[in-house]
Image (cartoon, rainbow, N blue to C red; front, side):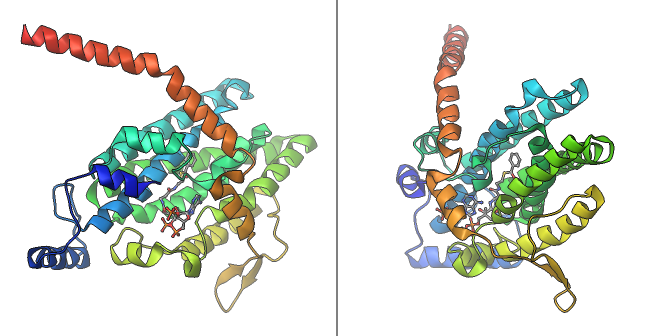
Length: 331
Ligand code: BYC
């Protein structure tokens, strides 16, 4: 995300320099230490604001782009029931994006600039959405694994130090929980009542989505440049590696219930650690995808840009309506 460029546009808060600002910073740190929420009109260090704009806007973009892989299956859902569930889920994701863009706007970030950064390819969004959805089983697998990973990562953000982000996350997490369950349920039906071909389709989808889901939590803690400061400020409550481990521990047990195999021969319970050990993560693949060279990066961005261009007449009509109302009110 081009937070530097965005910050140049934002004039409200300046970095702490004077003695007065040092006192403000001290007071701010004390409030964080007390576990108080920081609200939009409260004083905050510029770096705290920029960190939040970076994370919240990336998160909003992820929800927005995240509609595309599953949206691809709305017209091909196998039953009316599954189609209605999928429509509701994709619609929820649009809603999550909107709450999050609004939360970022409370930090003086402009919606137009956030979207421009997405459309130009400067902004990041979750690596996971750059993989294709090849079969119907991918939809259930995204619900189970991707939404499962999202909940693991997002529940701690409900206790994030910035009030508007924390409050948005409470509702988002409730909806993500429904998303995860519908995915698991869809896979369970196929695994318990499906044909051999349907079961093989589920296994193939799990094979493809497992490692990208494990990567979603971000780089290892010792290679995560933002973690230390975000943890100190209470933006991040649990580290990338800890969350990844919690996700793996939960998913292994769920895979047993489903009757699928996770594609990692090194997954093994470690009695001493009381966690599952797991195999090597291909971080080269992760960075390739994050840097724009995953299987669907170009397709995803093109879809966002096309939607923006196709929707220009709606934005123009809304503005024309607004102007008309203002003229009528003034008359
Ligand atoms: N993909 O220092 P780090 C969903 C970047 S929505 C791409 O550890 P941080 C869903 C990171 O941004 C899921 N980039 O960063 C929606 C940083 O780059 P910059 C989205 C990634 O911020 C619809 C650099 O790597 N969830 O689940 O401390 C349908 C170094 O990383 C990724 C959120 O956004 C990645 N996977 O920690 C279904 C949750 N990982 O910005 C499902 C909120 C890392 O310095 N975000 N990078 O250039 C977070 O919790 C944190 O931002 C992260 C990364 C844990 C993701």
